[in-house]
Length: 121
Image (cartoon, rainbow, N blue to C red):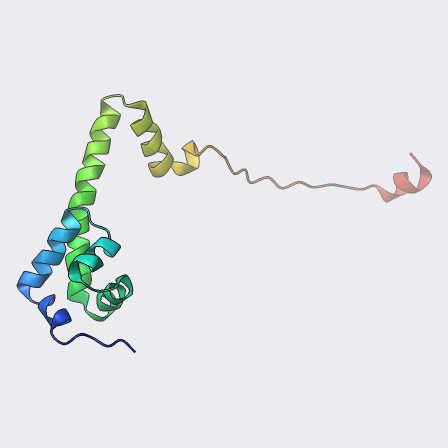
């Protein structure tokens, strides 16, 4: 059972606390770094995200902002002809067509002619 430090999680449910969490995520921090800033363990942060939808949503909103900025920067590099960026984009966005190992759906059928095999033909 999770024991919540009195007052600690409550702060992060306030407008100020939720904005701070959103800022952490918007600044590119990952959950482990955010938990450290909050002075809690990562597992506690995961539990709070499950238990308090407001915390989860604040982190998602912050991450969405920075993710969109990175996606836009990658897109611009692709348009500028950056080969590495183009390869990365294609492998991730069009993986079925551009992955290095193609998976083929091949069904092999082997017919054995027992009559010929018995007679040695």
